[in-house]
Image (cartoon, rainbow over the protein chains, first blue to last red):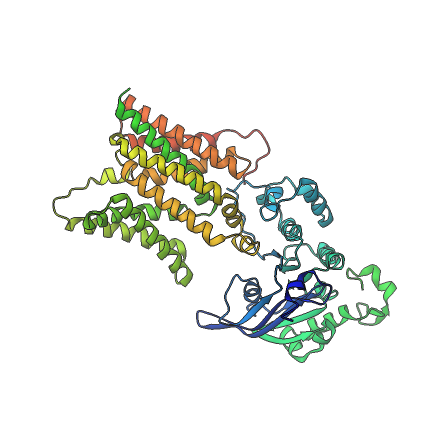
Length: 269
Length: 266
């Protein structure tokens, strides 16, 4: 791996973009992360799930280099470009700044490109709106646009669906998956909206200070640790959503053919 | 017009020019109280300077910087909310300054001039120092503008995007400390805080971009200085407070002005 490092970013699918090994973080004496390993490869969508206080945000911040781990290390592919969408953007109405200006704070780009990008994300109407006046959902889209504008190797999205109405969640998530398919970005995603996110996730990492289970969504949803953490109901729902969709379950739990189910479902195979 | 009046005018205008843009960042970053707390500690800087026999501007500058660093360190400890820390720091520094002052023999300090300075007693040397500050501050602020604006909007995002966040904040703190140190001796504590905060707040309604707001804040500050000084001449009122009153009048007028377009402020 060491010798290939310099080529990692330009190489094809499957190369490691970022890897955390044995991360432990203490905050005021409390162990927040305990010996956590995590890897994101090019073209891979890794979803980080866990309850509140499980250390998801701390792990993301450590991987991004915003926090220093007490032990362990993070190895990045050289020249790695990261597009980041933080969980909270605190907007002060005393700062007069438009969406267009916000987008170009990190990366300079012509107006036409901003317009196209926002169009793809379904937020083209807000280009000249003051940032402080966006709704929560619009803000998330705009922040995602800023991350995409960087043409990153790795997208790190902390709760990108929070505050987005349910009907737009799967649409937005499909966009993330679509961008991955088109450009081969690696994606590290933190999300509470498990059922929306899991459908197109390659790897799920279930965090509870330590990595309690990891793998393909289907196997994780059956993992006893996952079930005990999220409850049987969530695990079963996920198992349904992550099936190969030869059938679905109707409201009574009876299997129905997928074609019929498609119309009523928001998440396709 | 008398020479001392022209010198006062030039001094006030210089301070207003740097205070406007710097104040915008304080307002955007919700750090108005941070600026005020540092200013309040300036008296302690004066006393320490007298005790150690060093240049007062230097001693105020160094003390402001030390307190800013102490504050950042205390905030990292997360023991108390930062406005509580600022309240403790500001007023204990002020009290310490007054107590230490009592130990110095043969010096009587006029507290009113500490608050409002003596803008009518500005010397030519003071003017040189002020305009050196103006040049340094505006140059440095232009250089860090893009990075500091980005980290003001969101520090994590800026840092991930490779912005030298810590360096920008350090430069900004140096500029604030410098402005307080230079302005304190000449125009006084209250005037410094007022010229940092009031013009920036007043400029908000007139601006569509951050850059506009910085320039308009500087202009409002300059107008306040001019109006305040002429008012002080005309009605024989103290100059420092007159400038603050003029700035506040600007602020109220702008805020009360009826809106013509769709409101941009909530």
